[in-house]
Amino acid sequence: MIRVLFLCLGNICRSPMAEAVFRSMLEESGLDKHIEADSAGLGGWHVGEPPHQGTIDVLMKHSIRYDGIRSRQIGKSDLTDFDYIAAMDEDNVKGLSKLGTVGKTKVFRLLDLVEDSAVKDVPDPYYTGNFDEVYQLVAKGCATLLQKIVAEHQLANGQ
Ligand code: 4NP
Image 1 (cartoon, rainbow, N blue to C red):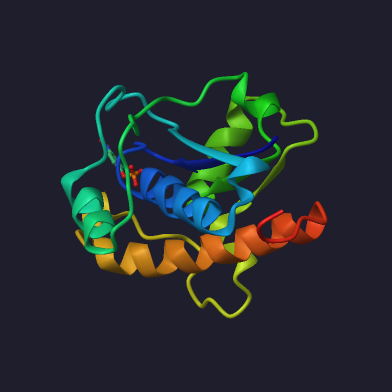
Image 2: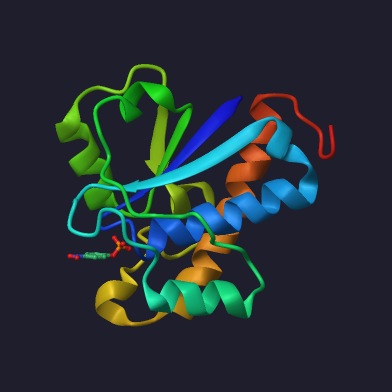
């Protein structure tokens, strides 16, 4: 199984949205047989909580399931358990590096994969309130990430 972790600060707004969007892409393409997704936050303030209502609203608007997603704090074992860690912003990448070294895991900002994206940090809607903007960015990032993984692992859709 190829394992992908989405990382943000609180794991209630951006990274659970990315997890839900990416999972729906995996299910639609049949790639859920090969790839699985999870999310975590650097901070532990919301551990055990479901996603923020703004994230829930935007996911429901796009008919994307989010059941079972609960906030958790990233731990040292995550540094070796995942093949890819897609961080929402540069602060998340820095925070992750303070936790330890990652070995073979590929760590990057999600939007660094989207070449034509002027925005490279996914803005935090916990502060901006703009969950629709986050959805657009995260959807683009997730689609590009999926293409990257498919190419790197010679997977074909539906296989
Ligand atoms: P997220 O947003 O990192 O996108 O989940 C935040 C959620 C909660 C907090 C900060 C950011 N907080 O400080 O509680």
